[in-house]
Length: 185
Image (tube, rainbow, N blue to C red; front, side, top):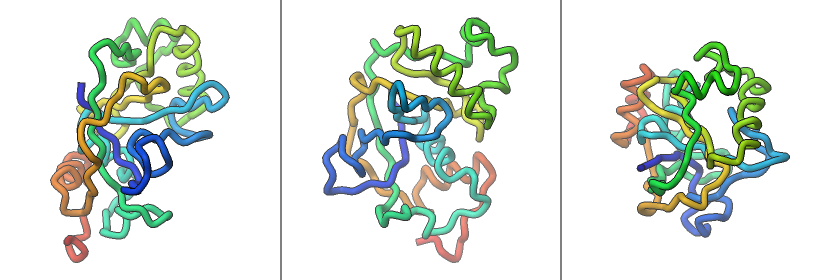
């Protein structure tokens, strides 16, 4: 399976070091983070889904948004996930019920205490390398949080993205965001 991630890329960094495509930061506060147990690499089923996850909160996308505060440009990483990888599927009603999740909207809630609690329970079962759910921005994109990346391989070098990258334009079109045309280069 192909997965995609947008991240601040340092082309001099080793893949598992800060700025590398396989770097997983410690102590994050994301959807399924439980830093006392594991680190999470977040990815998407689609390149435009990965873009949406990073920039979706912004109504207008400008050229400057595609450079991280640390000065590194954002890039798109493409991964191959081994077929043997087992991911807990939160798009499956029986899987949700096994976690006592009553409503599908509870999966994409912004209440991190709730999402981190069900993630902790999935992790404690020791059967999966992570979890997958539909994106908050568009249900055609699937979001993934992986706490075990040993079955994940970088498929090709990360590609810098800009406001004119096809995946950015596709993401903006899909989730209805505006690209500042005056800054498109």
